[in-house]
Image (cartoon, rainbow, N blue to C red; front, top):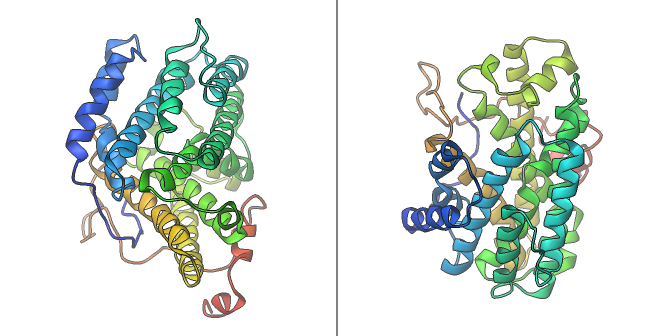
Length: 350
């Protein structure tokens, strides 16, 4: 299934070296006790993910970002996806993790390997980030960890969340909040709070989280929709919401995803018209994260991704969206994004 993402592909030249160093560091941290899990994580290409999503990065903070990716992947696979990961157990572990990044000097002798690794990364972050940037990143970690607890609660239930709840849950639990908070740090520039709090920029940031989370669901289900490890996935939630089969749900998911991508492109262009240099680089970084995440997924051994259907000349990519409407999706949690578009933009959509 091809993706619509007309953002140019750019990769940092140090991708392979970055990955080799990151894998060695990850193994040294003893994040995972299981040999199979360590081998699986070693194939995730953290360097490729970081180099594709942040090709503008300065070497040292870029390396820190790659290590951050490694910890999040290990935590997701080794803790969050395990059968014992109840909402109660994750609430306790994520609270300890948040405390480790809030007060990294307060070392707990019994902290978990993931909390210990994140505490060390938080201390290293002080070399590259201002107090304001560290505060924003720490707040973003709270967004991420709260999503993990909510996700764990749903995984223990026999039913699925509503589509509106799932969209909110997954944009938080995917780990994109702290990732986008790293954009300005890795790039070596600073953005005023007022710029990031602009409703248009907040919308673009949440759209980025959502596109990455939906893209993850789509390419992880590309091979066989019915061979998912679990049913907490956009496709399954749409099957429940619409009372349809997986094939129809996939078509609906692609149309939703493309409509949000179209919104991102138009809103991005409007913000860039009067953006200062820092905000300009941040907004462009959001688009690069969406594209780089797809570039990485198209080649990462972690995912078995089939080629596009026969006759699809562009393989992984398509030139036109399945839905180019500027009308809001009927989801209360995100419909406000479309309110940020100028009226003239909606008029051009016909």
